[in-house]
Image 1 (tube, rainbow, N blue to C red):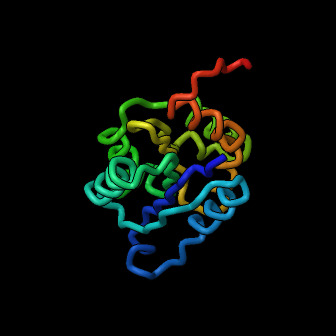
Image 2: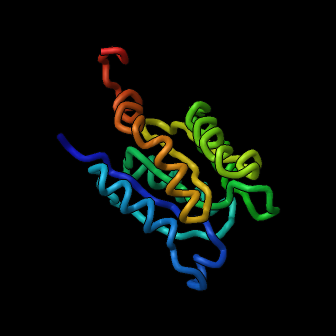
Length: 164
């Protein structure tokens, strides 16, 4: 079976300037590779609405990535624009994934309720937003990881019944 091609987009002003290591991107890459995903693309962009939109569209529409994980820009700071970018590129949301991540995170911190992370579909690709901290990115990805293969198969047209 062919591995799903994945991309990891870290959204960080400091990271894009080389002032901070991409620890969350490294964590996500390791986790995806352990689950047999092919991490085909990685990039760091600043908290810039247009750059995020352009990268997501490029990776879905031209690179044909089946999964894109973003890290960062999901909070309430004025520069946190990842959800706004997602609203511009998604065909539809998969709210249960974001709800599950927040519910699991609420067991650890009340600040989880401040997350505006989204998950959704553009064409035949699943895009999921994670927090920027490596610890939170790991915890959130662990929450949705068991459902990723099935979700991507369905998005890409798997005709089998979900209960089979």
